[in-house]
Image 1 (cartoon, helix red, strand yellow):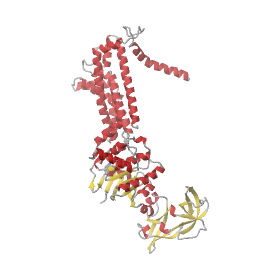
Image 2 (cartoon, chains in turn red, purple):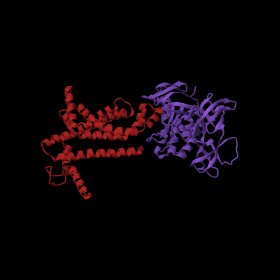
Image 3 (cartoon, chains in turn yellow, brown):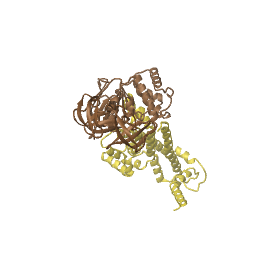
Image 4 (cartoon, chains in turn cyan, blue):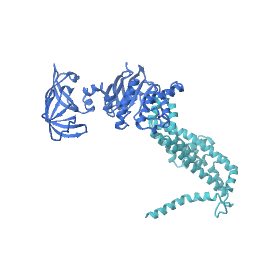
Length: 261
Length: 361
């Protein structure tokens, strides 16, 4: 194949991937009653209705709280696990590392069912807390991967110098290690938040009755009808889940540059 | 007892023994260098004094106090690394003040100490900059300032000059020695660079394979090596097989294949006992090449042929054959270097030689 053909082919692949997304964004501004072409005019009507829909707002709040808590817990655990794996010579390091990363490799639906069956086996009822724990399990690998990569690059000299100057190990962590690790911690946190905010498979299995996140709410709405509100909601989601990590990575890169890598 | 004492220190990593039963006493205020090739255990020893690794056996004392179970942050040490290890997210002033934060000091005292130490390392104007805005040499001075501002009991330097380029390294060598002398701090310096060790130390500890080969002043270890390893590691030496005929009034009488009878002063052969096989060590720069016609002096003279010339500017290293022996000689160049194939007179003073027990390895 010649270069022009490869260019056309590449273009078609990108179109196939991104056209549906573009259509959703475009149709969310459609004035028409029906969420489909032809467009009858430009309007913010569906965004306004979205902002007045109690169920969606509630789902949005749930998703935000769930995402934020997931990010917080995942990042804390992820930083601690990375420190243990990178800085200490613990027995079975490779095994532990593999186990912690495994949730990425296992299909999410399998993980979801497994956790559900396990909870049934223990006769524990579904709750928001367990939903949160589920999200922590499959966001943790991302945090660990990002934080570990950065931690390996931070020479031990810095910590050893701080210790020799009289800082205790805890003071050394907060004064030296954490600030140097900050860009990765920040990036990991964003990853965890975005993945949690986006997730539907695990959430459908784990959520207790009456609790809806934005993705499960969209899913429920789709079962009744295809309302243009969903296009508007989709647009909001796209901007949140694409824009937030991009913004975050830009900030993380700036921080990394200021701190001299 | 010295400022730092190691008694029967052993360090094993799994089945590998990095330091084998080492004892050493470092006097207060002295500059002691641990010198050896990589893997000889010098850095491991330094890190044990620092408390970054625990010895498998033995005892370490600092100022008479056993520190085996004292964690590094309570040992009051100054530590300087090869890669400076300045905190990249803190300014120079914050870097230097870091250790002072953990000592009970008023803000005013702290500022004054930071100013004083920056003056001492001759970088008073960089306080508000970040480490990456400084050159390598400047960063290393700041690392030194950060380590000495806390007035540590011992200053530990882990190859602090090896990341600098050659010219800067020599300047820093002088500078480091000046500062050490000025504040009179007990210093342990680790290096694989013999010229650093010889130029800076009060005492040199030559190490190999986790053992101490020799402890002595720079002149001692250079001129009277205690082992073949030391003579080969420091400078360039010719090591010749010889037979000892025993001591007489003039010193130790040796019989050599090509060079015949040579008498080495007793103090240049402290470890040789009686008759038997020995090694004669002649430093390359003590072997003088001259024209055949040059007037004789006290030196023993032999005819030799130059086989190769390694031209170094003000000096040259010659590979010269005398009989069936190839020797190395490093001589200053007078007018012109000798040429390959030229026949020269190879001369040396027996008292410049040293003798070691045993046959060459």
